[in-house]
Image (cartoon, rainbow over all chains, first blue to last red; front, side):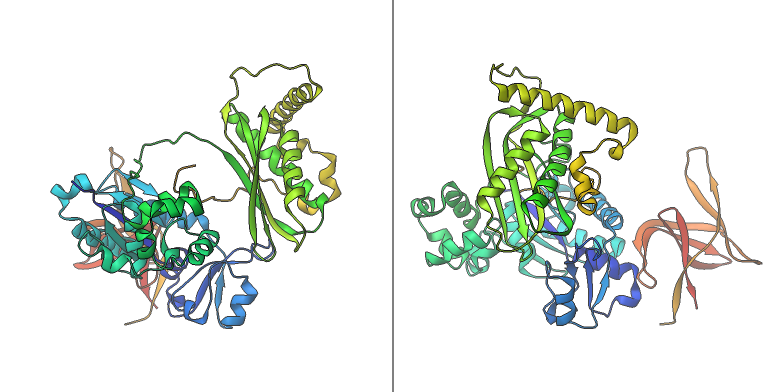
Amino acid sequence: MGRHILHVDQNCFYASVEMQRHPELRDKPLAVCGRQEDRHGIVLTANYIAKPYGVRTGMAVWQAKQKCPHLVVLPPDMGEYIRFSRMAREIYEDYTDQIEPFGLDESWLDVTGSVGLCGDPVTIAREIAGRIKFELGITASIGVADNKITAKLGSDYKKPDAITRIGRDNYRQVVYPLPVEDLLYVGPATSKKLRSMGIHTIGRLAECPTAVLTRKLGKMGAVLRTFALGLDPTPVRRTDHVPNIQSVGNSATTPRDLESEEDVGLMLLLLAESVSSRMRELAARCTVVEVSVRDAELEHFTRQRKLPRPTGSSDELARTALDLFRRSYHWNAPIRSVGLRACGLVEGSAGVQLSLYPEDVRRDKWERIDAAVEGLRRRYGYRCVQRARIYADPQLGRINPREDHTVHPVGYFGG
Amino acid sequence: MEEREKKYVPVLVRFDAEGRMRPVEIQFAPGQRYHIDKILDVRRAACQSVGGVGDRYTCRIGGRESYLWFEKGRWFVAARR
């Protein structure tokens, strides 16, 4: 028997919440944007009145204002969006306990077990959409299918405030003509590769032999083909499921553009301290270090390196990250944000091969220093002990990546 | 539709031994107190006219029904301007 899966997507979530509570703005073009003084000055969400002007998510505020001069710009109120997200979840919980959120505004629901009690999946979808409208005053679009990927295509298919059912009977008709980019995990790089192979639609992808795709895209090729065929078997994770944490990361958009290696080194040091302290909380060490960089043109790259031995030392994290950065970045543009991630976590208490080499003695020493600093900070506050380097640039140095943390969307594969 | 505004109001509330609360009186303005005769319904609802989302109490006050919202620890009504 097939599963019944809904994907609920709150349309223009941040903007819709603001329109709900500010009735006077409901007929105006509106964008929720990051605060300009901290330079997160990009459009986070625009409403349906602003979109026809060309206002897009990710655009700088000044660009958006150029496209739409009478655009109303509001700062984000995350607390309120989280409240709405939680209220939406309370509605879902009346229908199933298998709810997997994807960001604040999207969720998958597995209602297979609820059909007997609540009616067929489309009826459930209609009920949920109606309740979101009545109880939250915002709209949602819902996709109904037998797997998560197709359900998400369904909720994207018609917006706002619509329900799309994609079953075996209408699958080819609805899904096959869609552009491949509509598929989850087909980003700009994959899209370019697929299009160079003449694959422009999901239908073409589905009909392409797996061997050809694997040759071009590696193992993701096979995964994408099952996505295109609507055969994705991944379950909707349960409400009470606590995933095994495999990585910890931190990133920050800096108060000013980073223009030199010194700047980047300083940021990486701050991030490394935060990541190392979070690893210590999990009693873990990492075996892989990953840096991600976004420059002022919003070009983005990620690089990682495996470490010879597991480490928890902030010093080693920072040095490895800086080295990775040095090898991969050529300063085509100044940098807007950097991130550091520790992956391949292993238990910190597990035996580590002892060594006579000075490098390892150094690591152990740094781990102990980190632990001592952490202890002091817990008692006397974050700013009680700091590296002298931080005073080289007080504007960058005042960031506390641990506390001023940003919400990271979770990956589909739960990584 | 007539113009309305979101007006936060002081409300007299009674808690019973189970911790359930029931608004008793809306103190709309000095000298303008409205006793709530009966709560007809409580449900979460969005207030379309003036904005806001919370628990909506349908109250009978002097034979007439009106809504009172409880949002983030404060009470409000959609008052005529």
